[in-house]
Image 1 (cartoon, rainbow, N blue to C red):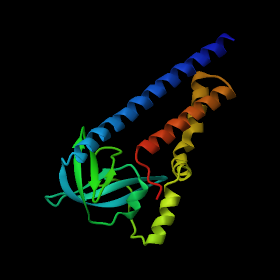
Image 2 (image 1 turned 180 degrees about the vertical axis):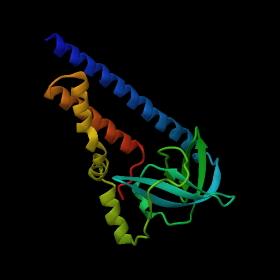
Image 3 (image 1 turned 90 degrees about the vertical axis):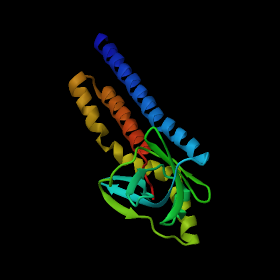
Length: 203
């Protein structure tokens, strides 16, 4: 009983720590996005031309805006997926404002695109250009890729290593099947959260 109670206490403490990390990590993405979006809505920032690209790396798919800067440089900004991005054509005109390292875009006529991270050099992985869609394809893809089910299916592979975490927990901290299940679920939830907040692209 003492060992079981001790194990429950440790799992509880780890759960609290994980929740704290998730809250801080989410705030670290939401607050800069909020600040940048306020600036761009006020008309601040720089004019740029943008092209949506999807970067495929192993089992992860992430959305970026490839931007051409006023001086001709090309930069890549990770973004939060929105179904309206499917209608974006390469070379679209936008305004970009930054705040705390994050960049929000207002793409003409009125599409606000939020960041999912900081600007980067060419992201590792395979760059896939967004296709040009006719009206029928656009409606079909918007209905398909805008669904919550599609997002969950996309982010789920990030949790493939969760059972390994569960096994390691049992080996290091002890406990039986209950500890394994709890640690596995906790690791899976954190992995899916990290994939989602990192700007996963279901298209």
